[in-house]
Length: 418
Image 1: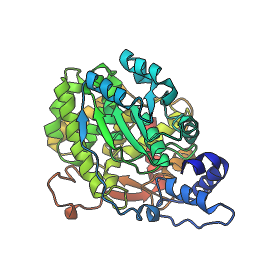
Image 2 (image 1 turned 45 degrees about the vertical axis):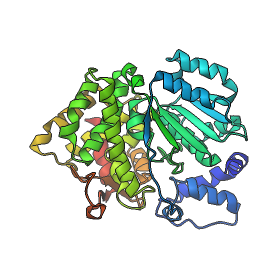
Image 3 (image 1 turned 90 degrees about the vertical axis):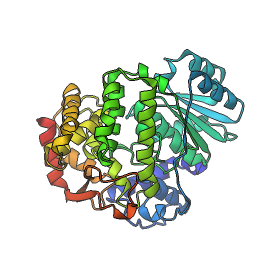
Image 4 (image 1 turned 180 degrees about the horizontal axis):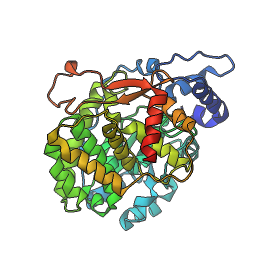
């Protein structure tokens, strides 16, 4: 796929643009046009919204998240050194690299087989993928990615295009709890929104060094905690997880606390992903709880309608939106759930920079990958404890509900302006 991707950029982008402007969703059946090369067209079908459902349904192999390996700083450096002469290519998150001298020294020794990426939502795009691919030697048989969620998303997509192994070493709590596992890779595609282009491709190995997380900023920690809070809602475990979550939130957590939270969230996510790896059923969409508004906010931030907003903070607002508008119902024993979400969103508010036209919101909503029809908006609304690590999956009910797109758009505008 690498040669098609690199050598036919213009035609590939034309096909993707055609898919978007035609209003295709993942459920659509695209009609091949003889104006395009069949080979390039097939690649576009595979990467558009991580593949049309008809494309993903062809995948019939067993799928599982690899068992995590927890390492300390010395072991981490030893693993890196073991791959330095092994046809490996390293993708480093610049934010992480500049804070760890030993890892930075490793990079300097392996600069010809490395790429340093400064992650942000604007550069998380197809042009960055083209650029990194042009640096990777043809002999490469492994990509080793060290960084946060954006870095891992891009590295995984590149490995998928090359059809080679990829190892992840997440360096943020968010990437460790959510983005680093489950096989979703990809990039944003302006002006159609978040993660519109990508592939399902699981890492061969997941490595975790919890000592990285104690030095993260509070906002960075909160971004990871929000995904943990989301998982605890889906599995009905908030009351069991809240003590560890609060320790991290209040910066009193130990390495053991971080390790516990990561391990438990790997169990949560792997349980759902193994039931529905390619989002062919209404199961994996439960992980999208709070993400409809979140992706709208991130896109608004990219276009400078609002000030910068981190992914986890955007998800917190997505959860509060569902609570305030009555889409999620909490019981009296979950008062701390809503209280914590409200506290976080008050500390990190949505700040408007420029007037937001309603059609902009509708444009983002229409491209949501959960939607089967562009005139409707599907929300992921699993009830508290919808899933259990022990329940028979046959008992699970639908988690998404569809609403008129303009109704959700109006509610979002009300929320942002309130």
